[in-house]
Structures are given as structure tokens and as C-alpha cells.
Image 1 (cartoon, one colour):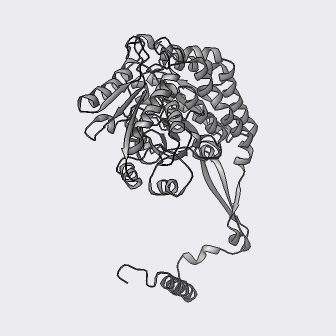
Image 2: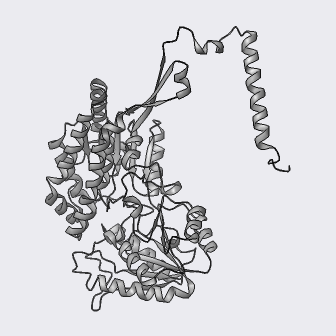
Amino acid sequence: MDARTTEQPTEQPTEQPTEHDGPRDESTDPAELSAILSSQRAAFLKEGPPSAAVRRNRIDRLLAMVLDNIDEYVDAMGRDFGTRSRTGTLFAEITGMLTAFEHTRSHTAKWMRATKVGRVSRLFGVRVDVRPAPLGVVGIIGPWNFPLQLVVVPAASAFAAGNRVMIKMSEITAHTAELTRTLAAKYFDPDELAVVTGGADIGAAFTRLPFDHLFFTGSTGVGRAVQRAAAENLVPVTLELGGKNPVVVAPDADIAHAAGRIARARMVNGGQVCVCPDYVFVPEERVDGFVDALREQLRGMFPTIVSNTDYTASVNRANYERVLALVDEARELGAQVESIAPAGEVLPDAAARKIAPTLVRGVTDDMRIASEEIFGPVLIVRPYKTLDEVIDHVNERPAPLVAYWFGPDRADFHRFVGRTRSGGIARNEFAIHMFAEEAPFGGVGHSGMGAYHGKTGFDTFSHMRTVAGTDLPFAITGIAAPPFGRGTERMIDFALRSARRRNRRRVRGRLPGA
């Protein structure tokens, strides 16, 4: 899975790592940040846009940094989370990036080519090209839920576009951050790639730097602060955020099939994934059967939890306690809460920071769990009578990063797609909208701004620069300067009269009140 699975509690924990979270004393000094940026920008300006070969070489070295140190990365992320499956880390964090890297490096030269535009202009002797130009220095702020992939994949896109890169790693996953900082210095000159570490003070200083572009993956709340800080320097931003992702189980869906896939999707990375299902709409007459199927699936997936190394723990105590608080409040306000804990195990377990898969029904709008992204192994189940009811519910809330549909590809599915807003849509499978490298990935509204993946990522980190020229012996635009002659007046009058006639034909009988 190309884990565009960003870290997202609605309000991301911002505290410093706790005692198990790792090193604190290697933080980058805030005063160093401006010096690194200045050095990278000076190198960029001195050398100019790099060739395709140089860009591919940087992408190759970035991937080598990961592949040469797989065991070290798996160990670092295991220590950061406390419990995180080696296989899960290899699959979601490392193998998931391979196709992205290969696609980007193999298309870099093609994406760099200028595009000829203005066919009519060329007939009159004016040549117009659009040339992708590197922006300069790109800043990337990474999350903690997939702390490696979600910095190196955008960095590869930035390299393909010809930029230098500065990365701020999440302080929550401190072991992974420190490993990446150390390794980057072995594979890159700091004028090409610099990795910085540290807590909230470093993060705040990083967002205030005058980058040429700032790319952030994280929570909606922190994203607001990032955009405010970047605005002081008019730095354009890409925000990869999150949201409460809805799932609709169609009336004619296979309930057991849907429940199995939704259960697995909810439990990826312990539910700490921005594209995880957050709440499920099920036809009211089929809710009990759906919950039965969910329960059976989850019990089969996790016969044990506390000692199960495949069961990812909450990344730290803050997120563990936040998820429990959401569930406890919902219970106190009347929701029906069911913990799918294995027989003989007492969960939640504070020492292991593990929460059993939990189903919540009867959620009302006065509960925080109704509006806050859960980011843990908890799933809300909601009954519905009509599709209009579902559409209204989704549209009355901030647009999610992804919406899911389980059922056939029929008219009701297309109606749901056409009438709702979300970053993407996936039918009958978890996160499948991210699998095609040619397709853009990003949110809309509260779930994000801008996109990346494939050429979209290259374009995000490029300036599309128009270059025009002519060798005509006379000035085409000279008529725009005074003194204005009678010929210019006639030309303007003719153009306006033609436009009015054409426009009147188009709007005749179509104006309000007509």
C-alpha cells in the first residue's frame, strides 16, 4: 500500500516523545535552519536546473538510503510504536514506495520537456512554449504514522522536478527521525537534501522559513497553523490532511464480503491511517447482520492482542488516551460500545498501549466521536433508510479524504459520487484510489489542498513557465500604446459587436425571470 495514509487525529498530539519514544538530544538548532535553506538556495542558483540524469541519480540515492538500511528502519519504527509488525512495516512503509519511485524516475525526462502551445499564434509568427521550471528549495514536514514513506515519496517528486529538499521529521517517531537524519548525511550533500529533527519549536521555525514550496502531511488542526505560518512569506503549500471517511454499504451489497474488507481496512496500522474507514452507513434492516459479520471477522483476525506482534499499538500514550476518551464519552452519552477483546485478555492495556477493536452504535452529534477523526481501532456503525439521508449527512460535514462504497457499480453509486465531495472515491476495496501512480492523490476542503503522485507530484513542485518569442519585423502589440488611431477604434468596435451578438444568442431565454 502506498501509504498516503497520513497521521491524522483531528488534533495531532504535539507533546515531546515520552520515555520510550527515543532520543531527544540530537535536535537541529533553530538557528541552523535558515543557514541550511540559504546554502541550498545558493547551490540551486549557482548550478541552475539539473539535468534529467542528475535528478534520477538523486531519486536513486534516496531509494538506496532506504533499501540499504531496511533492518535499521524496521527496528526504529518498532521502537517508536512499541509494537508494530515487521511485515506490516515492510509492506506499507517500504514496498509501498517502490512503484512510486520507479514511475517517477522513469518519467522524469518526459515530464521535463517543454510543451508547444498557441497553434494560432504560431501561424502569425509567435512561438509559445510552456517549460516546467524547478521552484528552488522545497520543505517537507512528515507525519508519525508512516514516518518514512510520507517524506521520501514527496521528496522523490521534488527531486524529479529539479529542486533541493529540506525535511522535518516528526518528533513523535524519534528513532526513525534520528536514523533518517544520520543516513541522509551519508547519501547526500546537505545542499541537496537536509533532514532536521526536533520538537514543536523546530517545527514552528521550519514552517516560518521562506521556502519555494512547503509540503505538509498531518492533521487538519496543525495544517491550519502551517498555512498561517507559510502565508507570512507567501510560500505556496500542499496540505495532505485527513477527515472522517464515510463508508456506504449498498442495499444489495454482500454483507459478509463488505464486513470483512471494512474490518481489515479499519485495522491497518492499528487504525492510525488517514484513509481508514471512520464510520459505516448500513441499511437499517441489515445492521445486525453487518455487526455480526464484523465481530466474527475481527475475532478471527485477532485471537490474541496484548502479545500479538502483528497488532500495532497506539504510537504513544497521548493518542492512546485520546482514543479511549472519545469512546468513553460516547458511552456516557448513550452510545452502545462493544469491545471485541479476545477471551481472557483485559483490554485496553495501558502498558502495551493497545485497544481492542471497538464498534460504536447509536452515535449522536453531541458526541465528540461524531466529528473528531478517531485514528485508532474504533469503527462507528450507522443505520440508514435512504441514500438521500447518507448524502445529506456527508455534505453537512467537512469533506473527507476518501469516501468508500461497497456494492455494485450501479446508478446509486454514481449518484453518491456525483452528489458528495471527497478527496477520492474507492469502491469495494480499501485505498484502491491510490494504486494508480498516474492518478493524483489529495484532499479537498478540510481534508487537504493540492495533490501529488506521479506527474501531479512533479507539477506540484514545478513552475509552469511560459516562454514566448517572435522574429516578426513589426510590433504585434504596438496598437496597445498611444496614440490610438481610427483603425484601432474600428477593430475594438468590431470585436465588441461580434462578442455581444454571439453572447446574446447563447443566453437568450436562459436568464433568471426570462
